[in-house]
Image (cartoon, rainbow, N blue to C red; front, side, top):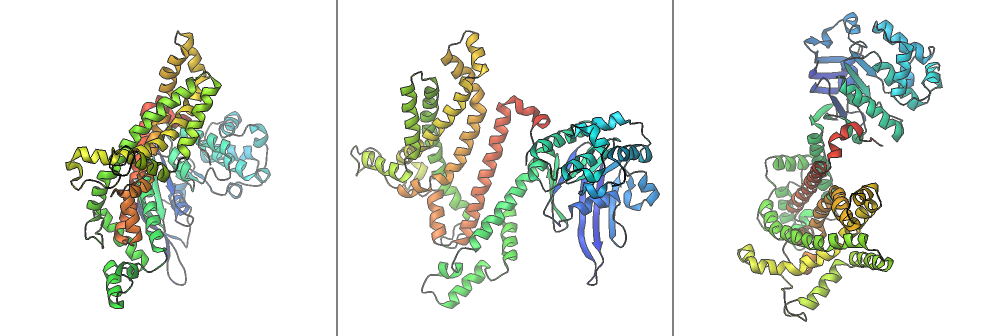
Length: 552
C-alpha cells in the first residue's frame, strides 16, 4: 500500500512567529520500493519521517495529508494510530541507544514488541535469526545484553532487527547505517534488499549518497524544509549532479580576482561605461538573483549571448565543437590503433626483454608533453616549416567542413599528437587488464579446450576485458575534450579548448559560465552512457542489485 504525502507542513511556535521546518511536501512512497531522502542536516528529513509516524506532539503544528491507502494518518486518534504504528509501519530511530529501554534486555524488548504491539507468534529463535541477519554473529549473547552495553553500531543493528522482526508493511529508517563499518553496512544493505523483495516499502533517510544511489529505487532531495527534486534514483542523481555543477561553475567565476565589468570594458573605459556594463550583465544584483536568472535561462534552452562577439553561446560552442570533436575522434582512433595491439603484444610476449621494451614504450609515450610532441611533429611534417612538408601546421580552413579534404588534413598532426599520448595510456590499461586475466582459470580452461595461449588471450581474455576497456575508452574520450586544449592552441585550431581559453582571458562571463556548464553536462552524460554500456556488455551486472557492495 502506497503512502501519499500531500502539502505536508510542520512548524514550531516561537516568539517571532511560527518557524516552518517543512514546507508543502508532496511525495508518493511506493509500496515494495525503497525511497531515499537525502539532504544536509536540518533540511527536514527526519521531521518528515517523524510526521509519518505521528511522533510530533504539541506544540508542533502539522498540516496537510498523509494517506496510507485511503486513511489520512493525521486524522487518526492516538488509539487508532497505535494500530498502525509498529504493526504496519515500523520506525528505526536515529539514536538507537536512546530509543531502547535500558532496563530491559534486548531479547525481552524484541519479544515485547512482537507480542504486545503485533500480537505475533515469533519466537526467540526467530529473533536470534533476525539479529544474525543484520550482522550480529554472537546473537545469543546480544539477546541477553542490556542496550547500554552495546556499541553505537551494534545498537543500530539491534534496533533495525527489532523493528523488522514483526514483518511490517512499511519501514521508516532514519540513518540506519550510521556508525557501521563497510562490511556491516554491506550486510545491512543486503537485509534491506531482502525486505524489499518481500514487499516491504522502505523510507530511507540518510546522508550517505552512495548508499542512497546503490540501494534506493526513488530519490528525494530536501533543502531548507522543501523537497526540491524527486524521481527515479538514476534520473534524480543526474539532475542533482547538474545542479551541483552549475553552483560550482557560477561560484568559481565570481571569486576570480578583479572586477568583471572593468575587465570587459577595457583599461581606459570611463566609469559610466563600466556601470552600464555591470547593469547590462546584472552584476549589480545579489548573487543568488544572478544565479537563478542564469538557471531559469538555461531551463528555457537560452545559454546566453557572448558580450564580446554578440553571437549566441550555442552557436559558438557548436562551431567550436565541429573542430574539437572530429579532432578527438581521429585522435582516439589513432590511440586505439596504437594502444590495443601493443597492449596485447606486451601480454603475449614470452621474452622478458621484449616485455621490458613494451614497458619502456608505454612509459615514454605517456611521459611526452603534448606541447613538445606537437612541436616535434610540426618540425618533421609541417607544411612550410617541416622537413617533409606534408601537412598544414596552423589553422583550419575558412570553408570548414565544406572542404573536407583540407579540414581532415589540418587535423592530422594535432590528432597524431593526441593519439600517441592517449595510445600509451590505453596500452598500459590493456596490458594491465589482459595481464590479470592471462594467468586466470578462464585462460587455462580455454587452453585445455584446444586453444593456443595466444588464441585464448585474444578471444577469451579480450572478451572478458572488453567492459573494462570500454569504460576506460569512454572516460578517456570525455577527458580529451579539455585535454586537447594545449594542442588546439599550438596548432591555432578554433576549437572548444582554444575558445574557452580566449573567453576566460577576456572575462566573457556569459560565454564562459555557459560553456563550462555544457562541458560538465557532457562529461556527466558520457559517464552515464559508459555505465550503461558496461552493464550491457557484462551480464553479471544485470543482477548487481542483489550483490553490489555498499561501502562508505
